[in-house]
Length: 418
Image 1: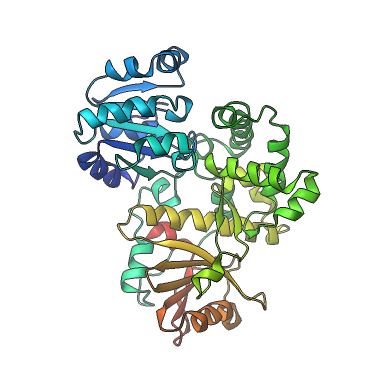
Image 2 (image 1 turned 120 degrees about the horizontal axis):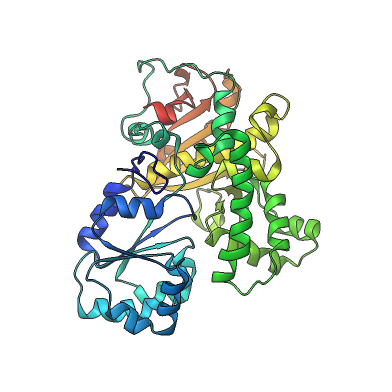
């Protein structure tokens, strides 16, 4: 089957989760950034389902002027694209579902997080399941199943695994800077960069107005560019406020807006004492490393001379890969970062109930014993809950780093080769 751009359809690993939700839930909402492939996935999964997009002004006007009448005239099973453009429809959908709770009646897609838009989410509470689609991961681009995360959390890492293919010097920076949007990674680098910048501009000019009362996008644009230099770093709202000349409340409002549009995310701090997590600073990450690199001017050619900046970008890149893999699992996995008073850090902490795993990320091709210090500190904090740690690095072999706690160095390429 072909995509909307007459290019081969790339399988999304969320297909089974989406199909399962449609089999037992009246309203399913597929959420994710604009242009990440939501509409293509919906059409591919059920090609005979009726489809309406609220990006069509005629359809949008009908929906806004007569929500009840619009929903009443729809087929029994229908996809409504970009639902955030007409929040008034959710009450009509609620009424329709209450009269007929047939599973899979409404497949909604949205480029804004409905669970952070109360007027939409409240109307469908108890009737809707939300599924989150991210930009393409490297495993999806490589047409692989992507079992790295599930294998690690279930069976651990073995040094007997087959050797990985050696990463060429240019492969990792290329993957990071092209990101996961089809319109970017299917183009030449200079054309991809142009698309990425125009993508951000279109989000600012159109989508922000759909979910907020903000009229001017210049401040949002400045904030996004500033944040692109801060990805994978501790979020300091006061510092951002001083730098950009806005009040703290304004910056918080803008950050919330960018989160709702799936451009950035906050990674909360992990602490053994759950109450203390609430007062620890989160890390800020861009959802897509390609968008971040376009905003801050990083290209693959900067790999050597801008290694520190690439190190931060790599964290965001890896976080997107593992959270996307987690979305395909049934497990209730949560993601954090760790940083203590001595500034000892672990880039990504994964928890499932009481169980704790740690993931450290290095841009280098070699690993030293000291690279596991953060994971050892995390293990001390987690105690018996700590399962194992991994140091992802730009090498080609799985290496044992420590036995107690159990730590392995693993090639970053395993994220999409397993």
